[in-house]
Length: 301
Image 1 (cartoon, one colour):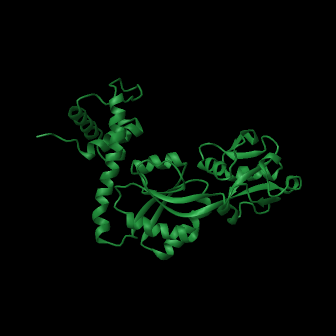
Image 2 (tube, one colour):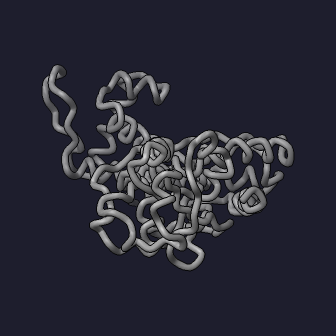
Image 3 (cartoon, rainbow, N blue to C red):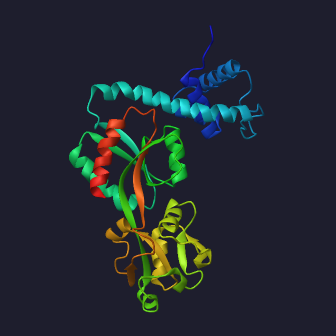
């Protein structure tokens, strides 16, 4: 009869990988250090190879290549185990109760999550939303590892085997200072803009790719090499007459341009926009919950 590793042993190893310290990992797992060490040792025996390098206690903990592979697959197993444990809870009760760990990207979160929490509290008082704001790549990794239940992202985006649901569209607008607007013909043409006059977010933000694609900006010489870390920074740069940029409509409606000497114009391209969608693991038992949540987000958009 084959012996199988337990999810508890895998949890010990994943936690050790995150902390790189036995005592801290044991504390996070609510077990003694000897229990954690023994569990990982048993896991090594089952797999048949060392998972971390055995050095003196003063040396930093280094995982072997096999250990890193086990941790990667272990995180996925723990996420599926979590989905399995939730199945019984939500088969017997209301889908909109308990808690949902929701992740959202920085170019959506400030303009949606406050309204979303208020609406969810009003409609579903038994549901508790736990929120996390981060970049798309970090959120997708957290979703895959079971750290989050569902994401609100701008699509299209490579999401692997995750499931998704489009809940609305968010148009793009061009923003420019009044001083510069007086020197540019409308409807605007990119050829009329000076080189390096279009400012964008850092590549870590998917809004840059979506805006450039949706607004048909193909002339790279028009893009300034300096990139901003947030929409607020972009607005300040444009307000000081440095150039122009693309801002999503939801940010404008939530006051991002208030008290700024700026003009909002339509960008080139037909109905330039990004799509807003929910993304979750296919193994999740909470699809019904996510569909209700999608209806709320769709109404807000």
